[in-house]
Length: 301
Ligand code: HMG
Ligand code: MG
Image (tube, rainbow, N blue to C red; front, side, top):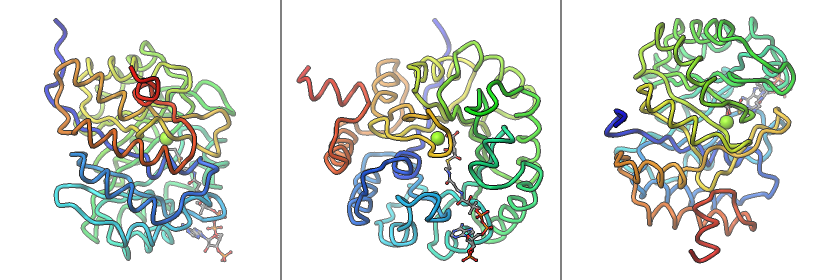
């Protein structure tokens, strides 16, 4: 019998990563109602929005209203993505609990996504991390395109490690490794984690898989076997990056929960409440979402 962790933490990124690529405009009050439902599922972490330029991500232009109107449930960490000083100011004003900085391991994707070279991004994020910390916030870092870039193809583990090293030097509390365009396979995840876990403690590493090619749950499984206990996911499998052509949904929180429950791994999440929250956002989006779980419900099985 494999040795799996007894408990894992699921970080729900649907309201941010899920919605940022969604072309249907979702009303601010519906986002708030959705996050309020998510807060009552037992999830302990919700990435609620991002304080990026509204021209770049129009769907999240209401970040401040969302962040200041949701009901904050004790025990839930409410996080937001921040690209720079201006975003940080808004994030601090709206009193999110955690700030997430992000950049890419790929030079081209970094430029397309945040309009800067990798070298020019470091001092910007360093300042954001410093100020967020002095405001007593925890800080999460994301590295995207870890397993492949839509513009450059393969990305070397050394390049990912270089970016990760810098982010940890800045003082981030946790690093999320993103398979932004969903190209990773378990063998590749194993190779990357092998190098990573020799250098960084597994408690500080989270995995962020997209399910573009159907490999996300297999990638979760190999990560679990390597001792990773934090995973990002998006309810219903919503998601994608508008600056990564071909990127589709994140691994679905509801599918992840199904797999973990079946394996006897605790998450603290109530399946019925989670399903209720999934049906709510599916209804607002107005089309069937990608998760297998939601599809089994609509087929009545
Ligand atoms: P820029 O145009 O280079 O910004 O954009 P700038 O610093 O030159 O400023 C230009 C104007 O934007 C100025 O206004 C600034 O004030 C304003 P003006 O003086 O012209 O009136 N500005 C802002 N306004 C609102 N909020 C801000 C902000 N910053 C500057 N934060 C910028 C640079 C980073 C802002 C832009 O490129 C941007 O917003 N990019 C974000 C794109 C994005 O969100 N992409 C998706 C993220 S998901 C991801 O990366 C992957 C992940 O999910 C993991 C995975 O899946 O692998 C995390
Ligand atoms: Mg993502």
